[in-house]
Image (cartoon, rainbow, N blue to C red; front, side):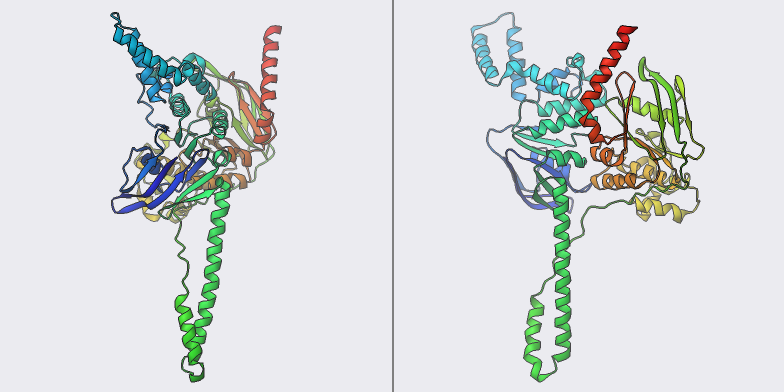
Length: 545
């Protein structure tokens, strides 16, 4: 068990939270939620001991091991992958290294033999002989191929490092597991594996995530940071949302009844306070009035943007035809003879672990990249707006936010432009901020403003939920669902894919395509069968050739 006892944390004069008392017990998974800036990551750092409290303390059951998902992707570049994962159990890793050092000695003494015997006993007690196989299972589950398990961390890309640091945190069955945004940069297959791992995990988990589906799947409890407090709810994210809305509604209704009662009492007192026969009743009502207190309903720190994509032109029947597209990048064929036709009601989610293939396809369809082979043709009634995964080029300039968006606006009016920025929670003064200094989330909101102002009837999104908080993801999800046009998108948020897409396309590792008119959950239910059919067909074709 880990608990916070009267914990207060201040940044300058501002208190992120005050007098927090909360216990996290064994066998439960706690989703820690709150608006950006509410203090979720800060609270995890306090629990882990990386930050000191302003007052109060953190207590952990003696002898329990705490494990944290680290965020520094370059910290272990000098180590092999397997070593990094096993470092998740620091004591076990120390034993392994000390053993290796002793056995490597040329002048092996009696003392060395005694020490080695002690280490071997502790090593066996900690199930050390299975350490590498257990680490390999974690790595394989997260999509790290066996052939790089002994590679150096410095040789891997950012997404691979994220998965390895996650495997490190999960390794060795820790008693308390702290995870800050564990699904970031994971593909949907890896997220699904992590969900099943945490569902079966029997110790204590505290997780921060912007993925609503993930929180609903794994969490038994929800800890909500708001109003400078942390309130615990039994249940997952959806249960918290319904409960919190119900509490607010009940408080507002209770206040409304009290206000009506106050008004009646005030009217009686006003009418009869000067009336001798009614003076006692008026005095009695004054006392009753003084006892009525309205509930203090504080404004939440959560703010929801308003995302509404409105196409200026209705889309025709001919939308997009793709024929035989192929593309090789750095010697790897990421697209292999891909063909499909998009209908005017299609909302297509591109799924699977082949991230480069999806981004490459979107770049080809938006004219940013040429295919090696094949063609594509947009219908004459279509207009496209594109959300790129890498948006750095968009903001590498000295424009203010207002001037930047004005450059894309069909109406050259500052009030018109600021209206779109306001929907995305940019206040009036924010308009003069330079775009190159914006945070990741602010840049995403700028790009969504650009897409809204375009009036396009075909939207292409490449991972739009990256860097967004829960409230912005919810607003984007609703905007994508309501959109009266065509959408082609990739997204790691399960709920966005499930609620938006009516057609699923998966680009397989060999660059080929599976295309199904179905929801995402239905596709996943039949996914294993689809993969087996694809493998069989591919093998049969090779044998025939």
